[in-house]
Length: 382
Image (tube, helix red, strand yellow):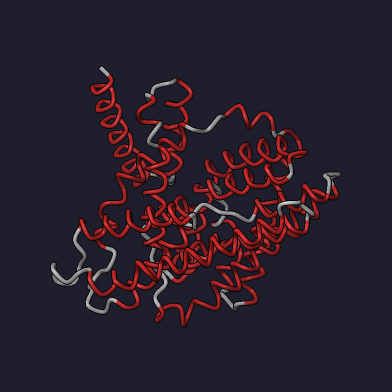
């Protein structure tokens, strides 16, 4: 019976994914949000059996590694000559302003400064999978969306560095260990990305006239994810590095990531549905007034940081208010930071976990909606 139930559940999940895709194409609702809501409902009702939910970690790592390769593929040197400085300035401005405003606001609200600083670093994290999927769903290929993809590609690295520094500044006993861990995680991931990307750029796409075969794409993704987990480095940064190497060095490729684009969506459907099923909606009730204030601070800070970065990088005036809005989604990276912070600051563990998970649920659900709105708003003005 378990085997039949497993097949029926997977079939139903793909039907839901197809429906979400069709509804998303005909409305202004991101399919990411639809999938998360469907997964949330199924999880609350207990409709997803344990064998499927047990595969969540595998599916999430697979889906996010696909996303990482595609983000790396957006970092073409020819385009970075134009957008590269803007990407760096806007991404750094958003991180710095988010940390400053969230920390300052929470301290003024009466939160312990050490806790406020750590929470502000967690607020700097985003959701690469949700943001990237919304960009692709929008069908808009513009300077604005290409800049967004670049920002998301480097955001995790900035977020990890900022989190390490904030944890150190907060006076945690594990601060020095955290700094060493972050340096090792980022540096090791870059080395691994080079180790996969260089032979990948040379060898893939030789058989099928410039496009990697599906088996080649899957080999790259799974090898990168597996080696990253084995080496305990960031599979996201490793995948982005490998993707950037391949797209810039594999001159014989017509479309270096065509097969990854082609096969990633089934994995993304399962990932977002199971991500929704894993959410505990009751956590939202635990965040209280501080949680609502934290959400408001993060929204204001990211809008302000995006505008400031766009101003400093001389982005088009009409685009400046929308960078921060488009980068509101938040997901697994923030939760991972919260778990590290909770271990480092056990006296605040309960508050950190409840606040981060509760607010992340909110940003996961309405963040993609605002991202899609911002992309379409900018596109309508051009």
